[in-house]
Length: 487
Ligand code: ASP
Image (cartoon, rainbow, N blue to C red):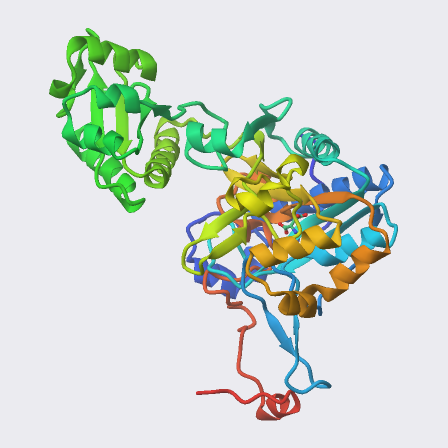
């Protein structure tokens, strides 16, 4: 690992108890940041960003800043709004990403743009989310999906191998279609540091005498399983813990079989399989003596969610998710839309500027759910690291997508009229991507939470405990902004 440049003079060293109360760490963040771990993380972050700038600049990219006070730029979250003093009752929206602006820069003729961009999304917080976060935002003209993917693959490989001390174990990066990712791992962000793929055993299960399995298959739903190597001796308590994990994802229960030394199977459902069927089952599952098979039978979404959670749990228990290893995978061929049953309309799976696959454009009129988008996601160690796409650059196609997602033309023109208008002036075909810097550095630093790689992060409740934000403001300020607070 290259030597990380330390700040030249370190006056204070604080060692020791890593289990300091989280709120206390945030309240005294400037002291927390003195610790070696935090010093290391922020220096690593600096080096990653520097590497990105050098890499892109050497390839003809221009770094351009876009405004933070702007108009809604939807990425599927709520907007943060800023009231205007000069225009009573009107608001700016902080960008959820610079998506529209970077596309307009392509219309403007900057063929290779990037920005280390701050993005704002008001959504429920998780360990890998913050209300404001940083992306490497990037856009290119006259490119196809392969061009963007090749550039990012080279960049990420360089970062891992030249900046971090992690081992890149996917060379080249793995590639999976969205459907294959769900079928084999139960998720579109699989952790490929280890195998333990899900196995569809519906046909074998249908031939068993176990009513739960046969009725699920009769209803057209799958029975899938996971083979945990060497876990055949799990205790009742351990199996109960695993069942709770499956139930938390909506499964009604968890069936299991342990393979004994002589190849026979043990467990409450063993009696429903005759010898021949059992042999088929174990062969298909690739199960060996000493292994544990975990089954979930339910609707596809429940089966996938439960087995994905169990796969990650078992990888943790077996020590397969080694933080020193880095495994990237591209996920491609996403459906362009997802059906929103609550609102009775299609939602974009990525965002509303993503272009359909050229051969799927006719499907927009006949079967929009079957149309695939020119979208590509980059996942790393089970996290979504980047999402991007080739964009629509044709006004008619863009208007059609607006209509399909339930935006009437008037609303679409009011919100995105500047985009539609710009498309009239000659727009190069273009596409881009936006890797999340916080998540990437979190993985490279082996940290469990993006807070550990952000100097002054917010808490789970989106608060800054050091300065006390958000906070009430003076009545005079509110008046100036034409705002009345409803108690
Ligand atoms: N704007 C997208 C995002 O923030 C990235 C992209 O499509 O380039 O996820």
